[in-house]
Amino acid sequence: MDAGQILYISSQLVFGALATFLAIFLWPRIRDAAWMLVIFGTIIMYIETVYSILNTFGIAGDEFSKIGSIPLLSFILPIVRMSLFITAFAIMIHKQYRQNKP
Image 1: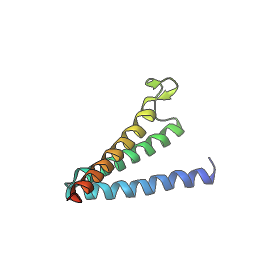
Image 2 (image 1 turned 90 degrees about the vertical axis):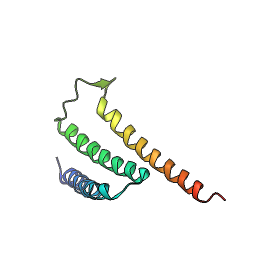
Image 3 (image 1 turned 120 degrees about the vertical axis):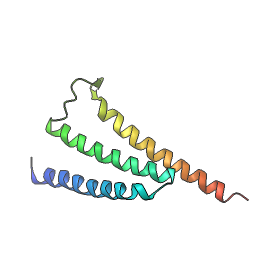
């Protein structure tokens, strides 16, 4: 592993951990459904990052659950994350249209 890969992995872990920490810190103060989904999406994004790093090192142990040649978690985590963000943005758009309706 060269210095570029170490820098990439460590920056992904540090910035992902910071975003996840702030999301978890914000969690008890938010009661809005859209923001809760964004927080959950951020947490799933960090889980996805950690899983991909473990997978890179061969530690993930995903040889049993696969869809074709793709590990199941590598398939599901991005879909769940993007679904949470899509739902959050749809809720925000719905609220905006409902507010601006005469």
